[in-house]
Structure formats: C-alpha cells, structure tokens
Image: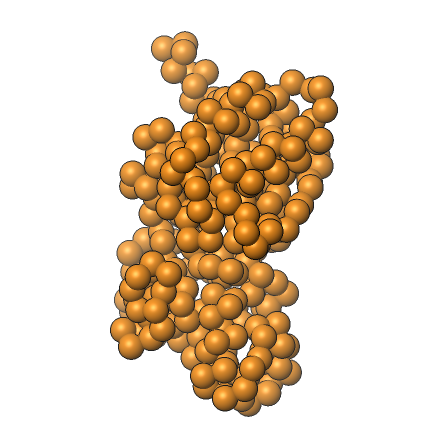
Length: 306
C-alpha cells in the first residue's frame, strides 16, 4: 500500500492508496493556527499509522504546500508554516514508515491526480490551478509532471497582475494570490463595496446575479483571465482544470473566468483550451500523490534492472 499525505494552508490529509492509485481510506484534520513543521509531521505520521496499522507500506508520497528542493526532496520556504528548514522531513518520514519517501508540491500532485483520474488528459498537456487559501498551479504533459525547476514551477499565484495592488506575503505587490485567493476575495469585496463580505457569501450572491457581488467577481475573473491567457500563450494546454475551495460547485465563476481569458489569448490559440472544475474535490492531492509514488517506484525498479 501507499501512504499519501497532504499539508496545506488549512488542513492535513492522510490516505491509503492501493497499487492502482485508488484511495482506500482517508483521514483529515484541520491545522492549528500555531502549528509548525514538526507539529505537522508528527500529526501526519500519527494519522498514517492509525490508517495502516501493522500492514507493510510500499511508499510514502507527500504533497507539500510550498516549494520543494528537488535535489534532496526537502520542503522549502512555506508562507503559512515555519520550521521546515530545521527538519529532515524525508528522513523523518522514511524512519516512521520504513519505506521510500517522495515529496512534491501539492498543486503539482493535484495536477497529476486530475490528469489520471479527473479530466483525464494524459495524452496532451493539462494545467491545474487551485484557488483556495492560496493560488498555485501544476503542469502535466503526457501523463507525467513537468518538473523543470530546482524548486518548482507554475507559481501562477505570484504573477503580478496589478502593480498598485496589495502586498503579497512573497514581498511583491499585486500578485494574483493577493487579489484572488479566498481570503483576498473577501478583502477585495471590502475595498470595492465598503462592507465586510466573506468569500462564500460573495459567491452565493454572485450566483444569484447580485449586481454588487458581480462587480467584485468580474474584477477577480479579469485578473485570473490575464494569468490563464499567459498560461495558454506559453503552454497551449488542451485542458485547464481549476480546483480549490473558491471553485467548489462554482460553474458560473469557471465560465466567467474562461470568457475573460479569451481576450488575453493569442488569436490563433483561442477556443482551443477546455476549462473544467476539479472532479476530485478534497481528494485531488492524495490521488495525485498515489500516481506520483507509482511512477517513481517504477522508475527506480527500471533503473535497477538496466
């Protein structure tokens, strides 16, 4: 069996996957506000042990909510949690479960999950984006992750779309994440409407065609359209899948984003990319983690026989 782990801005997830990538059991916990890296690893190991009992573990695959130093699989800087620089996370997990450990960015693994079990784009190129506590992306080409950088790639949340916009935790101003993540949408509504409005209520009013809410959401869709237009111009993906809490059951927002994107796309590339909501919901990262472990184990086996 494969243990699949996820740690993001708000929750911890542990799942057990079969050899074909299907999830057998899943457990979730919300992160504590004061949680650090050691707390997270301790919780994930505890949750994993509760799921597997005494059964042997074939691999551990971890979707981390930040950058990953690919040379040695160490989690890198993380905006929502401190302490990762002081812990050898791969060794910690390997000793806990006595199995090979594979660590990758959570959005990248989500992209892999959608390609194989969701939108099903394993022959061409799929771009996955999440809009939740933060904004991130991942690229799958012909069924495998595109891994071109030492620390990652597809960090669309930190593309600047408004140089006069609010400061982002990364240090820049006007990043997409600082304007269109779940918390940022609430702040955008406050600035534009002069009233406090949480993101869930904002989207409910938008779907009911409330004019004020629609102005805010249209502004956000414009920012997102710029970035997805850049994405299409660079990659020409056959499929873009958007997930995360903001997009849950939000087909109307997806359609608005897709419509606003076309204005920023190279004319010959227009109307060639399909937009979908995530089909895997809260399990998307763990589904991708299972695929990633299966692929990495196969690579290791092949290298040992050649």
